[in-house]
Image (cartoon, rainbow, N blue to C red):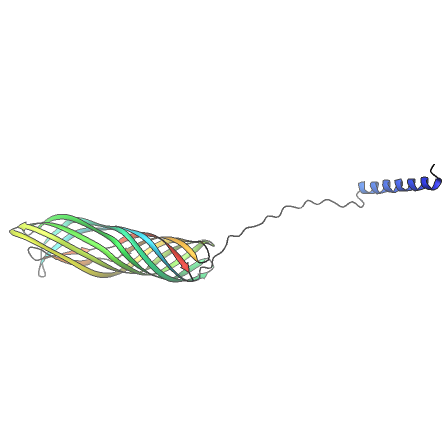
Length: 261
């Protein structure tokens, strides 16, 4: 049997428990539950420092060099006849190039000079016929872009930390060959040929994009248009000689890699 003290202790404990429960229900000492919103982690793309020197190489394709061949016949300095639309030369072929350059970066803008040397397989040959001064001629014409050196300024804009679009403008120096092989029949027969190597300075314009693979290595694609004006080439004829104007201007696209240091 419980004595009086035990009964009093049990009653006191029960009363305390009831009091605490009542207070908790009334919000007196209860700790409020706070909902914590999930934290979103922002992933920033890896950047690239574009400033500094670089070297690289590229393979490309030259195309779009349309040149309509005509002849002005001369006896000394006197014009004695003209033939037009003899044939068309359409320059095209593969190219390979190496280059070196330097870039400065200011925010999203990147600018710097680039020097490129290109060996070219851009060429074409075509045959045609024409009549001048009583002779009927058959001729084969060949035009070749042998090599090119470009000194350009490239101005780029970073569309994101690893991708750049850019424009190209500068000076181009080209080495070319132009040749005629001509036979004629009329008041007798004729066979003659000429081959001339020459160089010419023009301009180059273009645009491209470049994508960084890591801090050192990047890949690029580029379009260029080169124009060298016209150059007078002479070839023998049965009467006097013929003068034509070579137009070795052409376009090119290329894909390559750059290594920064």
